[in-house]
Image (cartoon, rainbow, N blue to C red):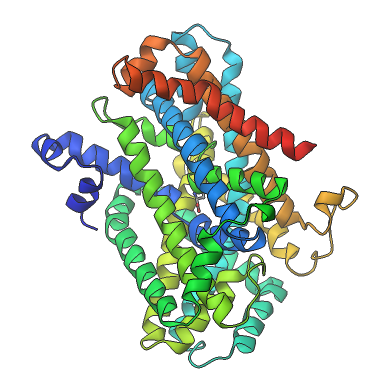
Length: 469
Ligand code: PFF
């Protein structure tokens, strides 16, 4: 998609092209925010958790969570960032002062920072898997390979802590170099070309899936909900994933919102980003599940799902080496643009301390994340049997990686999102809210506030409470 056509998604071509600066800033936001949102969550995590949770009913729950929880909270986060105009922690400080609220609200920023740190530690290991697959695809390893050979290749990678560590390190080095140079503006230009390319490539993969005789089965798996398959655990996973995939509850959207001009429609912009993000996830699902069924694989195979299915397509399709290499390269890039948004909050916070330069800050944060990443590296081999919470039935068999993922996506992100909704819905000044939303003070404004005050918090709470019982 070009700039113009992306803009056309939001239907603002003529107005925006008149005022150049606003146009580029809205685009800058959409690009940066989608760069953060679209990542491993869409292409790696969404298909595998959908497979583990039985398909259609889970997808329905996920879409519902995006609509009634994700989008309102994204809007609320961007509101805070745009009004505060600073880094998440300082924006919260600013708003608390302006509206004379308790300074304790700023802990919201702190929790997000901790979660982003924990997420990046495992995100980078999975990014490393994708990195290793770029080389594998380019060297023609997949060409003509059997299902068993491709499965064995993935199993071999997981069983080798040295290889995993090397790829994880390489991925972190990439992220550290980019963040330390603060060249995000350059990244935005790259995202503008690469994201549409990823989109097109996903369409090619869906096209390939269409050529198998199991497309209908894959489609039905995704979109034919069997409500009896939805567990309370699955509901929590869907909720958590809505946060994860939209990069919510981390302060990322607050940070990016701080450079969104006042006259840009926040609601439209948030919806654009969410729709793009959801489309990428659904396309990934449509590309993968027909392959799963066509090759007699297990939808609930877990985190390795895309690494065991997509190479099969590349092994069989014409131009598979080229498409495979390109696909994994774009996946790495999508992962890197998300990873930089995960490292940034910690770096920003560190550099706010005296005497810490951007480079030092990035190194401190990056190396700490890298060290913690070793826990995930070992979770797949040496520590595969280390399940510290196995005494609780629901955590039986969950490795340290599983627990990190669970604690961040299913607990920390929804909790901090809940507080963001409560803050903007109930505490922030009404006048400021009206100004930010620019929906007037009629029905549109009232409906949005109703959702943010009641529906969103209630949905999060219901899923939580249901899950605890
Ligand atoms: N949204 C990213 C993905 O779907 O891959 C992951 C992510 C990035 C989560 C940034 C949270 C975040 F703050």
